[in-house]
Image (tube, rainbow, N blue to C red; front, side, top):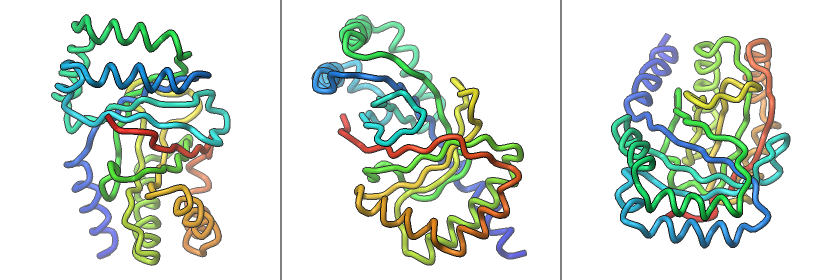
Length: 227
């Protein structure tokens, strides 16, 4: 009973800190030109006034995801995202840099994502494992994931971020939700994931959710730079 109350409390608490992250996934054969164009864009007054974080990530070993990189903007609330959206459409500077960037990229997908439940700040994390899945019973799945992941974090002393999110707009037809686990570097991400897959806690969790979620794709996302 106490464990259930704790999970519900943490669920409500995490919602109070919910953010919105816009993912602009793309494919490129000229990453150096993308970085150069993005640096120029982020040095403008338009970008400096964005009320949120601005980052470039690279996808590695990304399964069926055709994107190589992702530009991501994360916002603290609805007002911050609304301000970004309206400013993008009205800023001539943003449109000019956008056209310049489009010369070097092939857009793959755009999505506005929001966390359902999470723990810890993800902004310091440098590497993320992303597990995209189709979930038939979201409330039951989040409960099981919260119970497992908090037990795993307590057992291992993990302080990086982890959580469940979903695309609130720009939904991919193949998956409904995604889980992420953060890490300070690639070595830690790999070793922690390997240990997790071999742990009895993970086996128990996997058995509980096997009938309500189908794993669609996994990828490793590495932070290239923040702006």
